[in-house]
Length: 173
Image (cartoon, rainbow, N blue to C red):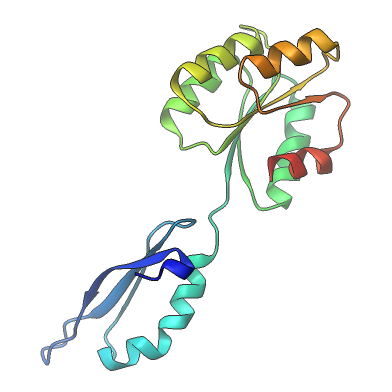
């Protein structure tokens, strides 16, 4: 265990004279499992271990689900998120977005209110019934009542179009 780094060693194997591979697996709070294996002398593993700690500490890209029916807006958001190191997934309808949420490990949702198949408010209600994933509404509805309803439904933020992609990414971070 390395609590200061938020990491732990999951496994360590030692080479045998017959040439069995030596290795270690490092897992941290912010990354997936990182595995290092080698046929070199297991005594060298501690000397190289600091390199694998650094690699394991490198954060995974956040997966951002974009539920937006306008291709030009969605592509703009995708580009801004990818530029900042995020992994965007885009769907055009609320139903498709809810299905993606069931199959993908999503870190945050950017949700339009005016979708072709259902209201973004209804999508948010369904999301909140099954998940606490953060939701940012991105919509042309700028009235106070819309903002209040969105936030009371459980959204974490509400951004009105037109918007700055850099500001949106800052809010995602």
